[in-house]
Picture 1 (cartoon, rainbow, N blue to C red):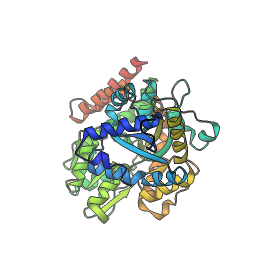
Picture 2 (cartoon, rainbow, N blue to C red):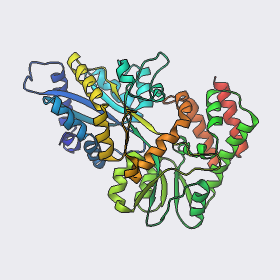
Picture 3 (spheres, one colour):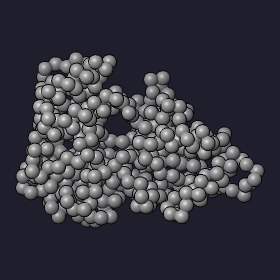
Picture 4 (cartoon, rainbow, N blue to C red):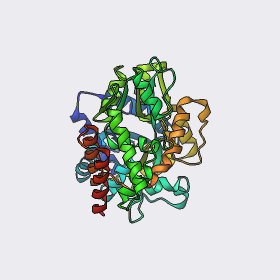
Length: 419
């Protein structure tokens, strides 16, 4: 424990830099500090909807403590150094640190970000063998494999998109989109993020996933598919016109409003659950996202991976590979899942007793429902400029500046021209 004490100390960027310099020297086998243990430097990427503050540092430390303790039983001389970085700035941060020889041995981050860093030459391909890859669903590996077949990392955990609600306001969570709007009509306050990725779960509920996937791939779509795309866009615009449904610019704002008690129901990522539990206690409810006339919801789950930094010595690289493979061990994955109840195991052979927990059951449902969008996720890489176009058009739609028909036509044309 206490591995993040240097990070939480407000005394000192200087001490942090000094610790990094010492760690780098130890990894390089510098004779000036022979008394230091082996140090594994792990950089942790935080998503845009996660604030980096003292509470976040404590959550990460609590979540990773079982990994650290278990690994040190096998390798007692190894010590860990963790740092948290926003994933939006991770590329620049890793580039600067790598150029200074202070880059991390391992990065724990979203799979899409790892793929982008691999494309930019900021992480090394993961040298997975057949035994490594057999542990995971092929679709998960496809999400983090580039066009050359290289793996950007090794999957460790899955963070799922679920619904969170305040039991004091909602005795029973809405199971369908109609029930969600009906709850708002009865005075319940609903919060949604206008960010396209956090909204995409509604596309499955309205039967528009196949249409959107075809559009993103630049394929021509039939009139029936266009109609389902229009129906999805029309629902979003109509929802925004409801008195007690509010769209916020990002998911972090949605979480903040829920924590202050100004919202009664929100979609949320399971990584936010520790903070929500701390504030709401037994009043926090967790359920699957609502279905709809088009089928089940289509949650976008985050695949968290360990990627290899480029600054490691040969000994540091060996430690990084040993730790990453330890992290995917079925026993370790099970302990992480049951201990935190915020993530699901990436290892497909780990069975989780979902009936034992409302939260685990909701996350498992999310995991099953997310398979419908695997083709979409494989078509969109991190920072894809086409998603910027989608975001701009959805914002225009929500403000009522254009009709669903107009926005649908604009999206189809833009994506077909991008191919």
